[in-house]
Length: 239
Picture 1: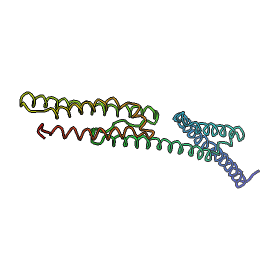
Picture 2: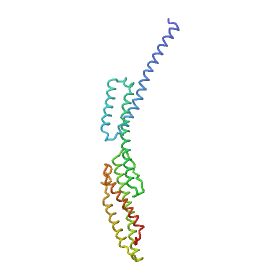
Picture 3: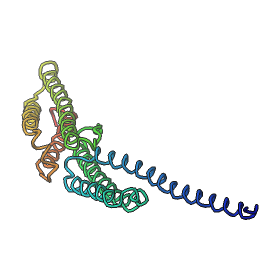
Picture 4: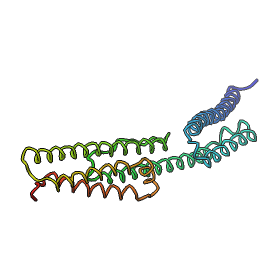
């Protein structure tokens, strides 16, 4: 018959075995939780990876294949090893973020450059925002807004030209003043304005993104035209 001490020793060994089994099982449970979170993170990464990042898509597919091979080889023991796979996925995430930030910065730089072209032409700021899910669409919307801004500026300039025409007519008919030179200048300004309207095309605005200098040159001509128009508005027919 076993003594109480022997029975306690046996019971203690059984308890220790249970604890060891529990700790081993907990390691698998913890690993499963980590892998579940990693799988969700990977699905989110793949779902938000733009088609234009072909190389990152290929690298992710390779990462996914390595995960499948890892489980095929290690079976349940694979649950315990997840950290290196998380690190590799993290590298892909950082590369995606880096590229998207670079694309956003390039868009904002171009947007700022377009606004600089507006100097002394229009006081409005561009409102188009960058959409990382549709970068080319963002540029199209930006270029369309640029066209709208110039169109508004041209409409305003045309109104001012018509006001000058009315002033010339008033001076000629009511004041009986010689306005031939003033009228000629108004006509020349009007003709130049119409040439600007014809010259500013969507293609010119769009090509500014690639470094084409036609838009800056045209804007400089428009600024000079605005300066001349402002001088004319103050000019008397005798000066």
